[in-house]
Length: 632
Image 1: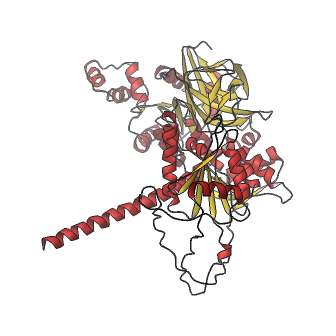
Image 2: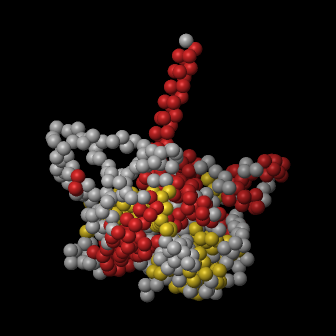
Image 3: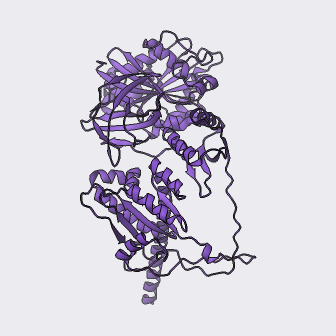
């Protein structure tokens, strides 16, 4: 576009604060639109979705290119309704600056406080626009006091003496100069805003176009373009599909650049960029190269996901929001379950906050923030898949266990097989009726398995309850090793430095995990690209580690193994690969998202940590008692 600097600015607001009205005013001022749209007229530039226009709210983040002189601003509009906060939060990862819109009549609302907290957590420099100042009974002084007390004391009206004083407080040299001359440079004000030590506030009415020019002038004057390194880096903030069903990865380039037909690494593989688009509303233009600071949508990659960091980018993080309550998606019995769940998982790529999960009973669960999101999702599924579903409260099934005898439980507080407790061997054996292939693998690396099993827990109840031994099915957990490494931030960062170290660290953590669960753990790593490689299985600590041979991926091995184990065993498969999850479901195994498994492992780690602290405390107490006895 030939502009000397590039900014990405987001609009955030509590619902009904006038965000759409301000966005229309900004678009009009930049010449993007010739006529301003309105929510009630259902012709707003950003609210192009059918449900958005019907409800009068923003559901999906959108973008538009604005040009003011030598500055190109990519304006990102975000949902204001609390039910769609996850969509808003994903956008924060790519912002340079934010405009927080306050309803002058209502002041700081509960959701406004949530937005402020998120802006602080993501360290986003923020301009504040107090809207609807044209309404009667609006108390400007009251709003000023509320902003100062509830958000930050450095929320100060731009252009005032207090504004300059607050900016000068950021740095001692600036304060000294201000006290001597009464002046402060724009550069020093910019630095204070970047450090979130100053929040310029502007008051006006977007509907009446009062004060909007001051806001635009302030953003242009008190903002600075980020500096980017030459090494390729990018942040993925959402996945969408175009009108033809083509998959698009929306990202911000945070370092280097890439061109059409270039290959970029998206995890374990490299994928080709087939097209680079720059959207403005529903329309887009194509470019041959994506430069630093640009917000683009690329066609080609299939393994990207929202929240992913590519190349040298290090901004991966977990959501800071409460992701709502669990609900069940009920669909007609005539619908092909396999195909429906497959399509729902594709839909989840665009809406990762749904966190789809299939229970052992094949119930499809989803996370919902509120009733509005629930209704929107039901209609979205009808529009996309042509299936009328009902999303309702999930009631877990209740099973009545028939117990024939009470067996004392073996002490399972700590499995001494864990790698962090050296010097011990043994532990749970492998079932004697394993399929021949797995049996050969295990016996060749670990020896002939023994007929051992975990005993049922002692039950203290008024009734006589005993679990039948033949009903106890051993659990096997198959883990796609590299998929987990690149899905967990701590290992992904390590893998960039040394993939072998990341692999060994994961194995060690899984050994600790195995020490607390009644399951056989098998982690599988791809080695199919190693020419002449032969499949091998190793017993490391208390788990099995499988390295696939040439021409066999981890996916293929897991699919085959889960199929062979499924009849007489409970099999869980840990992977975030959507296609793999579909196949796992068809094998009657249970797919587990890598992120959900991380939480499970973290819980075990915390339990182990507490146990070790208690063990250390008791040892210390015993030593003190021993010293006391010796002194006597």
